[in-house]
Image 1 (cartoon, chains in turn red, orange):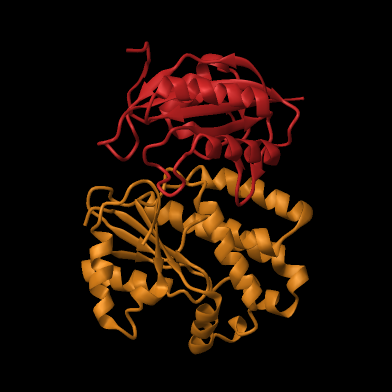
Image 2 (image 1 turned 90 degrees about the vertical axis):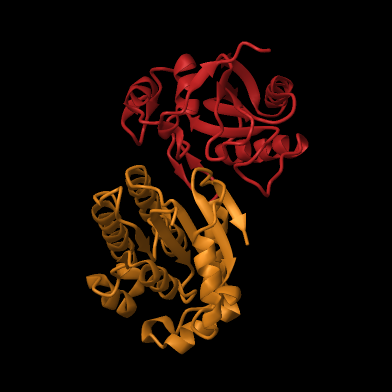
Length: 162
Length: 208
């Protein structure tokens, strides 16, 4: 059994519902969700005319190997009809593998820890809520330390619903 | 021009240096070209590939890291524009084919550490060519040590780049068809190139 950390993101349609659906799919296809962070709202990165992103970090127990987790995520994203062509544009659901235990993976289709984990507050804030002491094997620091040192300026605030 | 750091990428023979030169000349910007010919392991590698491939890949990685770290990170952010004809992850793309086993694992660890520490280009232009067209360019260029490169190797490189780009959601990557941007044989294409570097692209991959 492996402990993994995922980040959910959604910025189109009924975002809360999409996150609910993604968690349901994760429980059935990847493994049990042990902890989930609160939901945070972030300005979109790059494209300012888009709607805000909702993000949530999850800790999941899985029996699957990293590549298998990636496959299952692709299945879930496809099922939820994410547009593949416009990678950083509006999306129903985006699921990133942030960490897989303390493994370092560097393949053409998968990098763990996630290559931008330490650079973005929309990742570090939800993750530090559920795993502040998690150690990033490449940066050589905990998630909380990385958040304190992060230079990203984007505002990330807790989402209370509308 | 909106972008301050532009990287041109492509497989061997795609015409990276030509495009980088052109953009840099047009805007009188700084040009950062990969220093590969003075690599001390290159000649040895072509004599005894299996013995020197790890050393060669490592020295390429080290020298690319050094160039990016020194030239790009330390530039005057408010004034200087830089155009380069390589990116650091080129190293990973090649090493994933050329190395295996423990050597590849060690290489990847070093790469990951280095990759976290370098600036991201504001725009990356990937020049896509079919393998036949790359082979033709390589023949025309006539570098002796490139003559024996097989099409399957070029194919694999193309595939690796396109696959790796999908992970780079925080990079702005534009994939162009090399035929449409051949400025050597059709100088009128240079207009399109200038237009391209003045276009605002979203993060992630844009296919042109």
